[in-house]
Image (cartoon, rainbow, N blue to C red; front, side, top):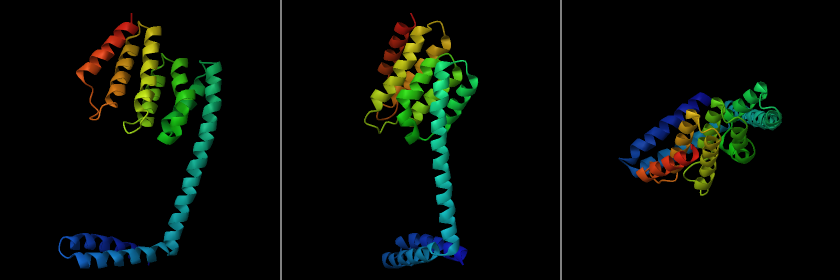
Length: 206
């Protein structure tokens, strides 16, 4: 019964869209009927079971994310005390890669950026930190330029500390282009941005 109601709702939705281009009244009536069918389907045991399963899975995912965040802080503290702790590092990187934008934002200043300071020469760390930056910061955010600049400044700082490392220069260049691009309405880096980045790299790699 639930499957039939669901199929009927899908059919009515498509039919109402078709009718929009031929008869507005019939389209409206068909849309109303589809809403009634959807309401009927939502009250079937099958639909309630699906909603219950989705809610349970959502709660489990939230609980798992909370535990992962708590474990993240614990392992980050261990890594801070002992940067050679590969087990703690693997845990931190794995958790950071799986966190959503909302979960990442509060961690930028106390875990993500400090992680780069602890292990600046680790390619996996740099890749994860940059990935976190790209997921957590968007052009729509009012504080985008400030936040992205923090990552760019961090990349320049580690380049200044290790000017002989070509990989760090490439990393700073990549982060710099990203920083400038998200501050542009079209998301494209200008020739002036490129010149500014090259000047920064030259100063920091002396």
